[in-house]
Image (tube, rainbow, N blue to C red; front, side):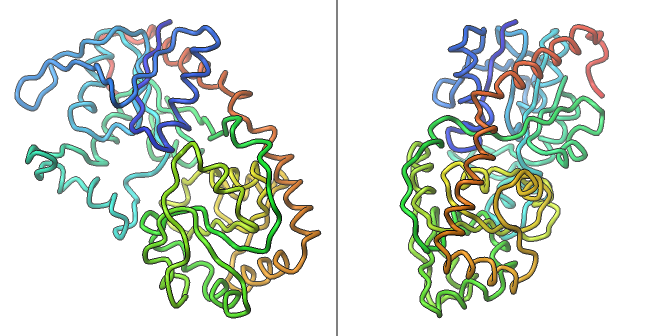
Length: 358
């Protein structure tokens, strides 16, 4: 069974869901080819805006976050040729907050507006829904996403796991509070902590970010944006490990209801004690023994203050988080992806080529 993977990007999502998985399976001897964004070789035979054929050598093609109009059409075309098509999704793109730049990029009304080189962009969340509708199998990072993209029943949850570079990192304990995130992609999430962070800063706490901090100061009620900035993906685990106490705020929204446990999991593996919002997948990780949940500003303040004031508590939570994360190494779970692709292949083989659309 020849599997060809097309990651959507070369950043976090592309690596966690596709690149690292594919590289590990290929190294183990499986016929898996990861086609990175700098060497795309999907050849589409077009007639105006319609895909007539797809030239690709594979038994299973795995596409990620398929928002382009042509690639969404290509799903049914490939299936009609007998190729199993898996579409992988990590977020509910139909529920992006309007203040997030991705909302404009993905809104269907903007699909045919000029992009780079004045050509139409051709991206929208509507295309992703169509691709998932026609896919042999849809893989998602959380159970909630099954209800969004796999209502036809051909769906499978593949939780996010961590590569080995997240484990065994040296860590120096401190009472520095940090948020490993970028404000532009979390425009309404700081509001759940209320004035907790600002109150701690007034009491002398240091607050930092790992990611773009522009606009975060005002969102958290601070006089200026906290220190922060972009971090390369291979340096991200060490950057997270530098935090003394981590936070993972998520507003109670439809978009966040489908968010994975990745952010607090990263902190757990790096030994960073954390406080997070009680969203579904954060609750799942907490129930395994990691972190603390906070549902109101006063609870955020209380739990962060407890951690700031107790090195012993930080050490205890650090050890508990590492223990939970140990069982969530990607190297221990790549078989789940292989199993999903085999399932897709079997579904495709059992599907008449004249009936490939749900």
